[in-house]
Length: 201
Image 1 (spheres, rainbow, N blue to C red):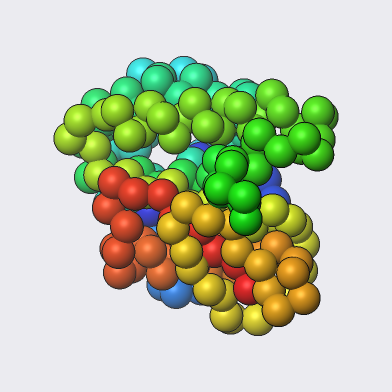
Image 2: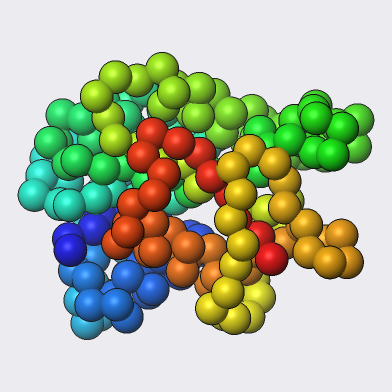
């Protein structure tokens, strides 16, 4: 498949690029400073805020993954660019803030939600709301666990829908590497068309 990754040099984006390339897909790695070419990876220096240029660059791709920070992204413009490009699928590296905790409330609404993350998390929730309201776009929003960081590539993960996942010790975590596996699995075998889902251990 041909897959474009927008925000390809970030911690999540770079893992997704690597995972897709390892699986034999042709990856268009889009970033302002995309780095060097690699096997099956074509870097493209582009400001994703330029909707017209982004839409043109995406033409002919089988899927698009956006791994950009929500606070730096105009969600409506991103959705519009993908729609105009004719690419059939948009997959979004989501956030955990909109997931439900044990009390049935969103993590975002918890009294303990860090103020420093509120702007980014709020923008992610708004992006998800726009996707849900869109018509005709085949999208998937993949929320990580509460802790989303560097860690081992175990090759395993559990998936859920709208509830925050925890492991046997009560920790809600997924590594960037295993998250990338889940994203690549969804690209290859779609199970969550026009849905949000989440992954964790």
